[in-house]
Amino acid sequence: MTPDTTHDHRLVFVTGPSGAGRTTAIRVLEDLGYEGIDNIPLSLVPRLVEGAPLDRPIVLGLDVRNRDFNATALIELIDSLTRDPHVQLEVLYLDCAPGVLIQRYSETRRRHPLAPNETPAQGIEREIDLLAPIRVRADHLIDTTDLTQHDLKAELAAIFDITPSGRLSVSVQSFSYKRGTPRGMDMIFDCRFLANPHWQPALRPLDGRDPAVEAFVRNDPRFDEFFRKVSDLILFLLPAHLAEGKAHLAIGFGCTGGQHRSVAMAEMVGKALAEAGWPVSKRHRELERKAAVHEPQAMKVAGA
Image 1: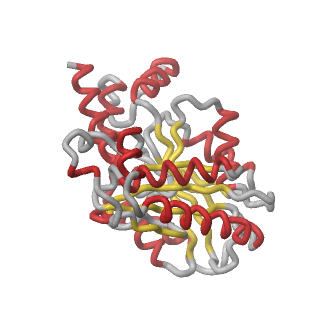
Image 2 (image 1 turned 60 degrees about the vertical axis):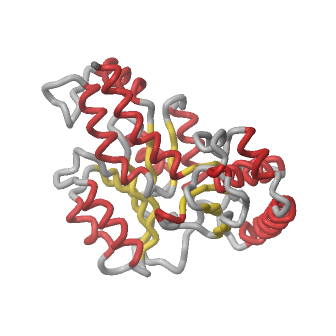
């Protein structure tokens, strides 16, 4: 990511469940040239973008330990700053498997902020549920479950390094039009004209990552030309964006439910871009929503 001269203020919100690596991420971004502020009350954040332009970007750590934290207020703050033409805002969500979070709390013997007198597992369950609507609004999602601190630093540098690097990273995301388009997309492609696997009983419970769903989508007579033209267009534009100093490009693929066609296209296009040598990350917004709902339920069953 390079400095954006069209905005006076650049902010990065770092959030996610306690123990997922927020403090580490803030320190990494500080090393990259950001000014770090942790646990600032949400009501004070708007004051940071008042007045003269900032001389460097700011990274803010926001989670349940913030004094006036609640998910609705944070979403409203994100929407408000996104509408401000003077502000460039990005939201980074650090995720982690509940079992690993429990292990980390066990190793440090810390109390969970949402369960000071109960088990960490109970606090983690509440926090994941609380943060679910923020997770799906994030511009960047990094799962730290299997990452070392070195791995996390490398991923953050690839996205947030403000020094010219001659690289451009690409994120490819699927989504459902029913829930609106994701924030921060540079390009969006509509996949709703392709044959829908939802109407096939055997394919309905699967998603676009499954080979059977991919084969069904590929079998649409319009698929080959669509895939070729989209891939060619993106591969043509990436060097042009890089030449303009852009360091990150977000591409969205949408369909009706965000489970089959858009997921399959995002997977296939992501693979094609990676094979062409571009650093690519993939996200599937609606599948993440389902996972966020099911994980707390799985924890309840495990703790029953």
